[in-house]
Length: 483
Ligand SMILES: Cc1cc2nc3c(=O)[nH]c(=O)nc-3n(C[C@H](O)[C@H](O)[C@H](O)COP(=O)(O)OP(=O)(O)OC[C@H]3O[C@@H](n4cnc5c(N)ncnc54)[C@H](O)[C@@H]3O)c2cc1C
Image 1 (cartoon, rainbow, N blue to C red):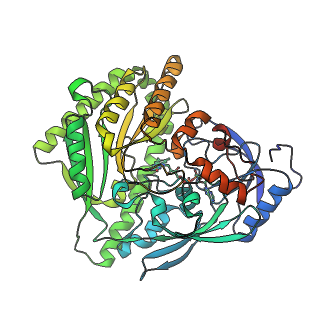
Image 2 (cartoon, rainbow, N blue to C red; image 1 turned 135 degrees about the horizontal axis):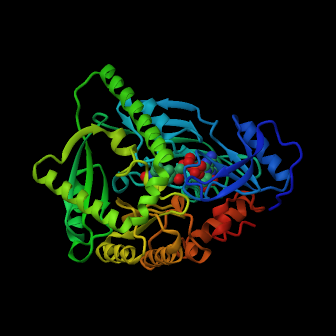
């Protein structure tokens, strides 16, 4: 199906465009279709098939690497398929088109005391993108991954037909987390969750080492609804695992619907300002920050020590708790402004890996040890708790994940890459996974090691998409043979 020759007369909602990956490390050029209706999705599909071109569907393009890129081929950008089709307050469900952003669902339902669990920090992610990468939020151990919130969806298949798929359908666990390999998600119905108010109480709890961290997490997982952990990856010896757990629980807040709407509007505005501020900061000071990170060992070692000590002092003074809109806890970049992936820039890597709860202590010690031995340890290290799900390419498991943001220096590129390979190896040997939404490094051998059930998805793909029309640059990189 691969054929990058010039296409005569694209449809009027298509054009060739340069598309970069999120941090600009990968540049691609694709014939991009931006449909606004199901009929246009079908026309674009038929057009690409006729031209012998492959297709990658794209949501908001907020994956870090090449998961939503398709160099020299077709992209169906679903951004304009972003309508809210039906909000059923009695059932607490919402049906939306695939390109709808998560933040727009919050705008619609949050003031009615409903929330969308399993939302990732990136509030501009689209619903279909969140389903295909089966993303997770800070509430992952309680609410599971994004796929757990899906009631049903409509899929446009390679033959142009539409199929409705609910949770009991045999294809459900192949589509959720299935990185868009089986078709285009046109719309989805999501289950919302009632809340007491849009506010949470946030507690910041310092933990001095791995054992204290795991003990704190065990308590927090019982007592709280969402959590994210900052870890000092530079701490060594008996300080390994030194961290600050940020945990949130929903609380009552006595106010009228009008008052709620008012402070939520202010909250949405503030969130957008924060987002723009992070981007502006990156544009203005990105190169300076990157230059400062040339002395990252010294800089991060000192910063981390200070951050931990401040956390401990505030905790002892009883000043480590506050009340805040959940919106901020959920969607503002954790611990760095601008977000760490931007700070790390085009040479940087993000790697998020899981490990099982039963082996958490040994896994943390080994993974953090590998980071420390790298010439460029991660700029940020974040831990989350998860629960198992049934997706064939499921990232989540009953355990924890560590998310690393690396900023390798040019002269240490090879050694840094070796450390990444060791992290992936240590993950694979425990049956852990690498999050594809953030990946730009997996080799075919590593991919098949961490996703052994991929062959089951491939069998389904051969049935539904025998010509292998749905693919992506990531799929080609990891050697997914689509035909
Ligand atoms: C600042 C930041 C914070 C983040 N935080 C988190 C986090 O907390 N947790 C987490 O899990 N992830 C996180 N991510 C990753 C992000 O949430 C995911 O990559 C998400 O999938 C992005 O959605 P998208 O709409 O941009 O998808 P895209 O990047 O556009 O696409 C993702 C995948 O979905 C497929 N796809 C998209 N739309 C369709 C469709 N209509 N039909 C079929 N296939 C489709 C694409 O082909 C691709 O395989 C973060 C990203 C950023 C930038």
